[in-house]
Structure formats: structure tokens, C-alpha cells
Amino acid sequence: MFVYRHKVNYYETDRMGVTHHSNYIRFMEEARVAYLDAIGASYAQIEADGIISPVIEVEGRYKHTTTFDDVIEISVYIKSTTTFKLKIGYTMRCGENEVFEGWSLHCFLDKEGHPIPFGERYPQFLAAAR
Image (cartoon, rainbow, N blue to C red; front, side, top):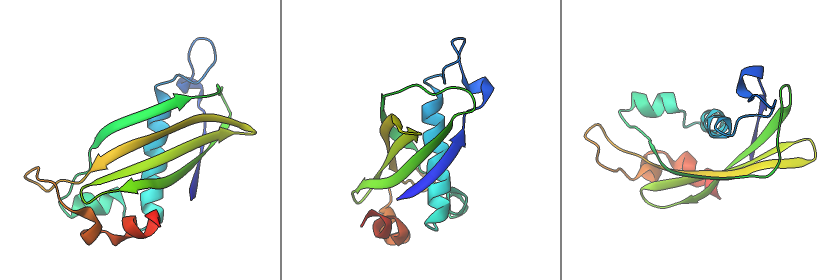
């Protein structure tokens, strides 16, 4: 499991001083990009290879609030894979509190928009899923 840390910025909070709910999706993306770099399958390399990987589904559950200057630890892991889809899981904690749990589902497409079996081209995903 990979852990990414994000310190909540002032501009990420709402008028009540709480981290705005929309930012947790951004935190997922930050953590995912760092995770893919760590397993040797960076977005930059994937895109250089002529492949795009859109988010096709996302789900999350908010469990506890965070505020300005909190450090959120985001655990990132491969939740499941199929031939054409990759589901990445996220668990966010701040201190003793679990603040968010979610996942994002991705596919991989060539330049013409056709799905490709990413596991053959990027075995790092399959190895990380074990």
C-alpha cells in the first residue's frame, strides 16, 4: 500500500473552515498520480505512449471533517482489475480519524478511443494488485 500526504490549504476550506467536499476527489487524483509514479507506470509515460486513462466512475464516503493545516494521509491501492478496467481504492486519515473512503474506476484507450488491455502493456498494475 502506498501512502501520500496532503496538507489542507486555506483555499480548500469553505466558509465554515471545513475542507470543501469537492476537494477529496482532487486529493484522490493527487494521490493516484503519485502512486502510479511509485509503481513505475506514470501518467506522463502512459500519455507519451499514446494512451489516455479517463475516470469512468468515482465513489466516496465522507466520515470525518478536516480543516486548514491538517495533514491527510491517503492510502492508495489497486482494488481490482479486469482486462480493460482498473479500480483504485483510497482511504484518507487525519490523525486517529478516518475521514474519507472511496475508489475510482479507469479504463485505458488508444488514440482512436478504443479500449486496450492495459495489463499486457503495463504489468506493474497487475503486480501491484497482488
